[in-house]
Length: 121
Image 1: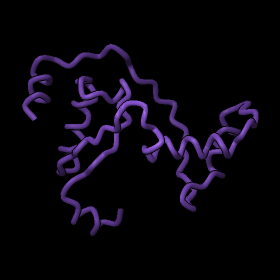
Image 2: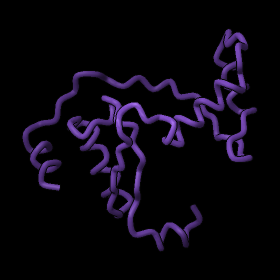
Image 3: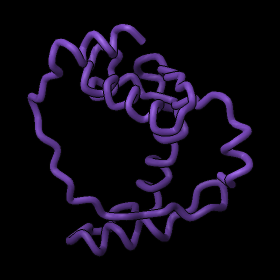
Image 4: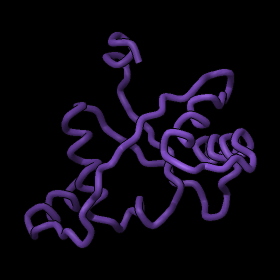
């Protein structure tokens, strides 16, 4: 978004797929969303799609178009996969494709104070 659009935006809405990683019961996820809201200084509203309704979710539709694009191609290495992803278009736009090798730790729990801060919001 352009800077003026960002300044005029009063609420961020994020469409969620209702999967276990982004569940409203995941305190680590919610803590990160609260941190993000604090950084951008805007309220965030999470919009959860009902289970098994991926056809309505724009990200899921984008994945479907990507699958059609590489339709049986052998994804033999990362470069091939990224190349196919960069070639696809969705709504006449090419995606921004970047490789992330970040490995996230599992089993990290929030401390009692952090839990209370998330629950207070």
